Length: 143
Image 1: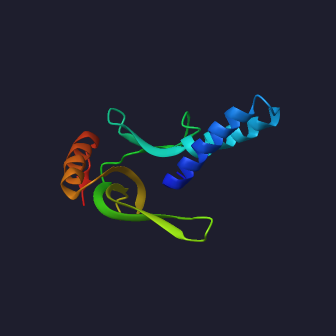
Image 2 (image 1 turned 45 degrees about the vertical axis):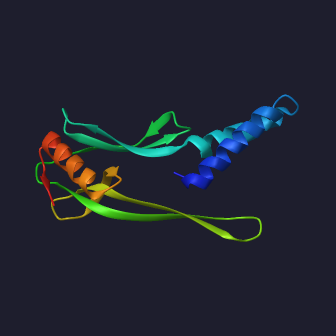
């Protein structure tokens, strides 16, 4: 959710907060902030029996938030290349870029509008295998 640099910083804050909690009771704020930033993530839950999917945000890595979307037979799923770049700056104002290149499985409406990402894979072949599996389980077509 916050990228690789954010997750590392959150875990660092959590560890520092745990070390300081013995001396300062207010370090609980650091522990909570570190746990939130370090462990919060996003993902997708798929329920093929009930034909629904849910894009979730896991707060603190434990509490899932999201809304179920029922999959209609006229919906489609396709593969889209993703090129995300996470940028952070060092204390000397040097930028550090971390590239996250992968292939995302996207759920589309019948009109071709993006609903949500459903999964991701490292390469195009794996993405097509996942696409075949998910479309068969959900009973929808591929783009």
